[in-house]
Length: 167
Image (cartoon, rainbow, N blue to C red; front, side):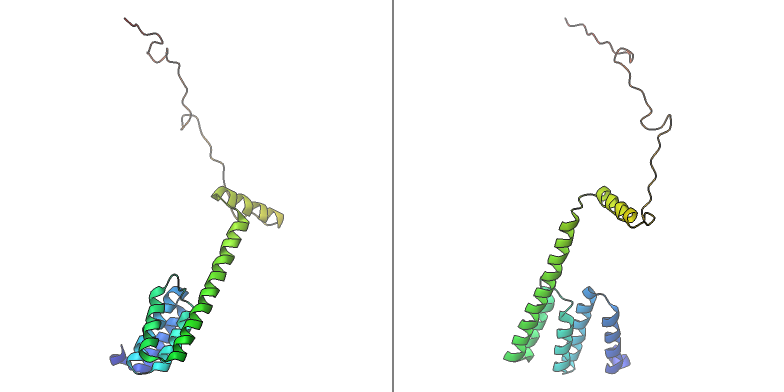
């Protein structure tokens, strides 16, 4: 794309992609964009992109992103930039661990163990707030002749004898 449209056009494409993508894809787009900038000799731009993309890359889930940044700093950085990368990594780890902790706490507070309990809680919340329930259920009906409409028979009626001859 760089050869067809030129560097400035490709940069705009990457920037729009990073803005429009979700967190998971944004870190990958930032890494690819940083690689392009590195190839063009724009080391500071590449570093800035890696810093920007790091906010989307949980070190526990995206170790490849952090290894790529580590390798970049080893190849192009100095002691200060390497320390800055480590500082950013620690702060991102803390941020993601707080998000994980908050999510686990919220799940623990709910104490929901089944779909039926979740629906019951939602219905109770809706009724308490005076709203029309957001979930509607209809009781199942069993008509004669349908499933469960059969009758049990005694063993004598089925042609089998309750007594057997033992010799």
